Length: 461
Ligand SMILES: Cc1cc2nc3c(=O)[nH]c(=O)nc-3n(C[C@H](O)[C@H](O)[C@H](O)COP(=O)(O)OP(=O)(O)OC[C@H]3O[C@@H](n4cnc5c(N)ncnc54)[C@H](O)[C@@H]3O)c2cc1C
Image (tube, rainbow, N blue to C red; front, side):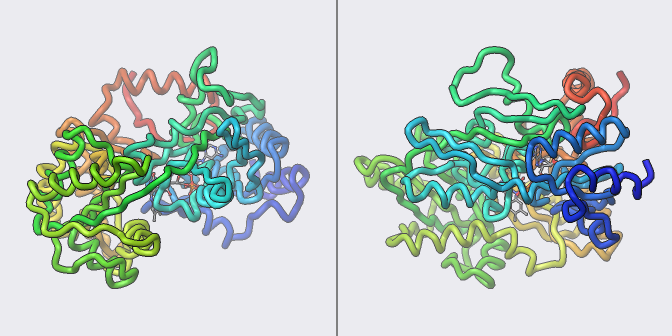
């Protein structure tokens, strides 16, 4: 459809001020936090489910693609309009609709920032547990799309364990409801299918979330290591001992350097690795558990374990971890965040191989990751203006995913597949497995309206 006509029709549905189509707008919405770029035909900012439904119905009838977008912070090209179409940006649908403390539920629109709900819950002494490092700006729509993780997901589970239901607009504009406020809903678990579907099956316009009382006590420790291997072994040993801390995060030397230059979190510059170990739960027994963890750290050659003495010290450590991706940007103009998962016991071995890949391609790699989940984030540093370097970055990223798959892990822990890792899906799935997923896509979106060209690789059926 001709772009001018499309804009004219959409203006009739949502008003002139809620349709963007200048060349600057199209350029800006062609980006997300990945290395990919695209160009939409226009951008629409709906204010209600009804408007989303009308937009999608129009797109369906006109045969135009629709890409849902929260803040565009996904790292796998999930919001890149690779085949043009309408970007539906949820910035106006940003209301917390309900906080139901007695039943431990909240209902939000997709454009609510993850941290905004946490801040709203704080006054009740409640918390929404998944905590992507991007939570200041990531939206619940995006968390839903990517099945996002975060440091506390080690103990509490990822987004799919905390989204219990949703209102969803289907490819033809129909509005349906999946899941609900109760824990065990009859019928097929469509919420489970939709969480993590990266905007390819439907668009969520409301989300029902599980909220929890804040833990009574928290203890945060910084364990400092002279080798990455010892830090990795500590992670396996802690979990192997039957302890599941709230978080077990690791940062390596290069990341520590970048963080200290910008955030001054108090990480020692001469360490090869640090672990941020946080315990939460009942006060009773917490000190004993902390002592047990210190013993395990010592057995694995820790140099020093420091406990945060005040909330301010604790926040400082977390500022270092959560600001790490941003801090790394000081080192080189660009970086590719790899996201793979390996069995925890394989962490030291795979990390060594990751660094070998860096040497092979002459690329610097920094590591900051959810070690407790075995979820690696090697950050490959480069300058995108250097085409040869960019080519090597893609090769190195793919090789790292292969290492994860060969170690018995997988090619994503939380950042999704998007545009970036479609061919790597074949490292972990057979063509038959992919074929089964394609059938799910066909059932939800037979005309490929939603986010085309994402997640699933082309296969011979
Ligand atoms: C500095 C930094 C740190 C990060 N740290 C983490 C981390 O710790 N853990 C983690 O998991 N991720 C992390 N991420 C990745 C990213 O922030 C998350 O994937 C986040 O959930 C994306 O939210 P968003 O609002 O930006 O979504 P977007 O990037 O806009 O969208 C993500 C996907 O969801 C789809 N989508 C958006 N809205 C809807 C909707 N309403 N219905 C259906 N689908 C929708 C989109 O089409 C797209 O496929 C980080 C990113 C950055 C830049």
